[in-house]
Image (tube, rainbow, N blue to C red; front, side):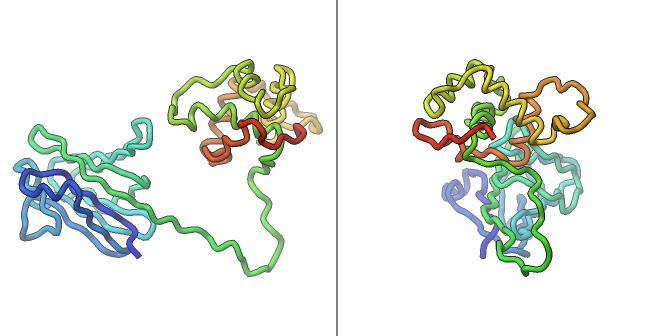
Amino acid sequence: MYSIIVVPPPTTEDERSTTRQIRLAPGERLTFGRSASVNRLRIPHEGVSRRAGEIAAQGAFWILSNLSRDQTYVVENPEGAGEHVKVGPGRLDAPIPFEFARIVLPAAGDLLPLQVWAPRHDYLHPDGDGDGDTTAPAFSLDRTKRYFAVLAALCEPRLRGAPHAPLPTVDQVVERLRPAWPAASRTSVQWNIDYLAVKLRLKPGPDTADTGPRLNGKKESLVSLALRFDLVREDDLVVLAAGAPSGSPR
């Protein structure tokens, strides 16, 4: 099964290179550079090294070796907000964590994009061996409860593709929740935000003597945690639509 797809940069030598794809199975390697004799992928640009680099498929991810002597390559995440990895001259087997990536090759004043896709996803089989107790989940969230709808409304702007968007105010969350929760109010939304801070262990629970330090930026902390660990995904925003099930706050 192929795990890595490489899309070469457009060149004047081969117009087909704009659509040609090179597929790599796990364990396969692809060398690229200016020389046709030593590379599987030739990039005919005078600013590209004869042996510029090598891409190796490693199952669900890939590694990059920079074989040039003086050029740093930048691997960008097109889906991120400026997220990138720098691979210095001579660096071998640098792991690249992006599912969609663009290697930027500096070439005598030009920047040549070499796209790499890693569409393969491997998951643990849900059926275990049945021995021992079930591991407790790190974060226990019920997607049918109102607190989850509040969390989804807080995360929505950044899930919609604006990673640095300001978070909605409590009043904006109330308005956003009205289609699925007509009785939403500032008090009920704020209560659910406080409840989430305890449930996600950002604050101690009410049954402890330690109230913990004051949590500044409570909404920002909740959204940061939720997005970092995929507690709320874009598919979950359906809970904000009219007619979505809305259970009790807890």
